[in-house]
Each structure stands twice: as C-alpha cells, then as structure tokens.
Image 1 (cartoon, rainbow, N blue to C red):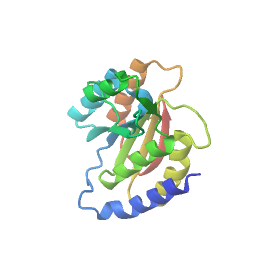
Image 2 (tube, rainbow, N blue to C red):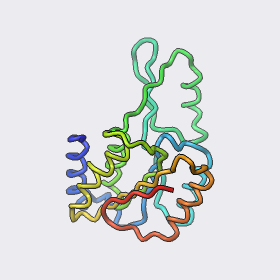
Image 3 (cartoon, rainbow, N blue to C red):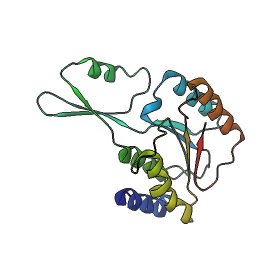
Image 4 (tube, one colour):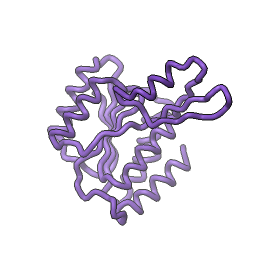
Length: 189
C-alpha cells in the first residue's frame, strides 16, 4: 500500500471540485503510460481529441537522466517527435533512470485537479503488489469509489497477447460506447 498515494488521492478528491481550473465537462483526459509510447497510440489519442471523445492526452512519466557530473536532466514523458529526448538518449554519457509506478499513478491522480474523468492506457499487465494495476485498484480506486467527489478513473490495459492495432481499435470502440462513470474500473483488451 502506498500511503502517500492514498493521501494524495484523498486530498485531490476533496479539493478538485473547489478548484477554478476544475473541468465540469465529464469528457475524459487520456493519460498514456510509458509502456505504450508509440506513434500509433498517439495518433489514436489525437483522433479521440479531434472527435471530442477525449478532452486531451498526456504522458504519465518523466524521462530522468543522470549526467556524468552527477546533475540530473528531467523531461516530461516523450511523445513521438520530441527531438530533445532523442538527443539525450543518443548521449552515451547519460544514464536513464526508470520512473516508478508510484510516480506514474501520482501523475494520473494530479490530473484530477482539472479533470473529472481520466482514462489511463497501459500495457502493464503485471500483478505486482505495488505495480500500476494494484496502485490504481487499491490506493486510488478505493478512495474515489468511496468519495462523493464525482471523479472517475478507467484503466485500460493491453493484454499480453493483444496486438497494438487491436488494442487501439478496442480503446476507440470503448470511447465511442462509454458513459464515463465515477469510481474506478479496469478493462483488459
């Protein structure tokens, strides 16, 4: 259990509806996990936004690099075409540091401050005790399921055997038929 993530979710659930930045529109924000950073996924996200089925698309990770002198370079997650990240990756002197699942879940929760509904896309099918699915289902889901804040989180996970194109088609179909409800739900495509 991540006590910090649960406390953050409780704070955001309580404070978000009072924020002037809070969107009254229930159209969901699409948040993409690091394991799905492909051109096709982002084309699908842009298509959902253009169709007004989604309010926007964001990444849920940071690319953090340790420079040889010990300083850290941090850039918000990559979407295809971000030249500055490619330059960092090409530098053999930089060592990439992973973004933990607790940070990814926290980035998603922070978006509740301006969005009622968030749909997270991930291919993290693991069942680790503090993995992404457990964090969302246990620490975030239990809070928003028990709150009257009106927040909704849907985690759509790409199953291991599902090809990327089939996953994207399934996500788009889900957006076309869904009525976004409060609380937490997980779908595996």
